[in-house]
Length: 328
Image 1 (cartoon, helix red, strand yellow):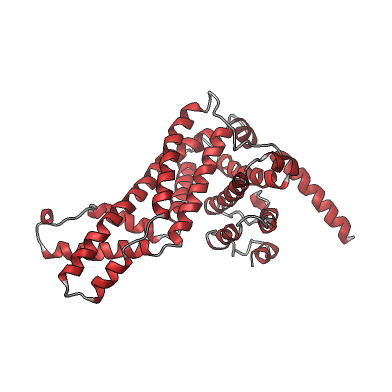
Image 2 (cartoon, rainbow, N blue to C red; image 1 turned 60 degrees about the horizontal axis):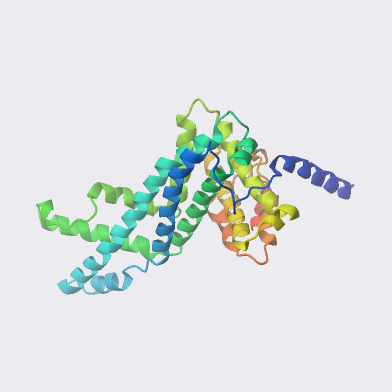
């Protein structure tokens, strides 16, 4: 009886996956005439995203200079050296913050194009593969940026030192024009809130998506959540399906599909009221987790950790125990 139930369950799962069974050519897709206007705008943003990630990878911080200045508070030379060392780093951090605002302004263009109700979510993603890829690239960027930020604590330390020192220097003089404030105080406050989050880009993306849903009253909420759900399941099926997987030429593209699958699950979990782990979500969470665990030749542990530590509803009562056990 137990084997029969397993067999029936497997058949039901295959039927449910039929809607997600089509190949998205992430390696070769080009924008159609219908996609071109939005695609061109997002392309320019994604070009800048590459520079942001490269800059963040090379970010070394001013930990030694700050440590020396704190250890010798009476040494004006060391104070000035630390201050001059941290200024260009803060200007660098501002560029990343400004880029988050650029993304925030452009993401609604993609959501509007991919979530309009003139097509189903499957039709959107099948016919607008170039825009689907761009949204996937934004998710990929968000995961990479937040992972670099979380694993580099000097970023938060540098900015905290800058805020403390800048505040002291401002108090020394009553004339703000005599200070060498490189970042306006109001912007520094916003940057402080941005970098206080362990995953600042994910916070921006989830807030932007939620705002898109609430501000576009003419679009049913389900259009957006169904689109996200479909994205996650399509990426999973493309790796699970031997025929589709064999058509992917580069190993990096396979890893890209896995990262996007995880990114969409996390985003859905932050945007949807009941989250991605509930049975009603439409995302096959169990199959997604099992797929990640099966990747022997890829670095998927970081993606599993992203599901463990950056999702919102994993520990809700509505999350099945079997799902929690898979991630334990």
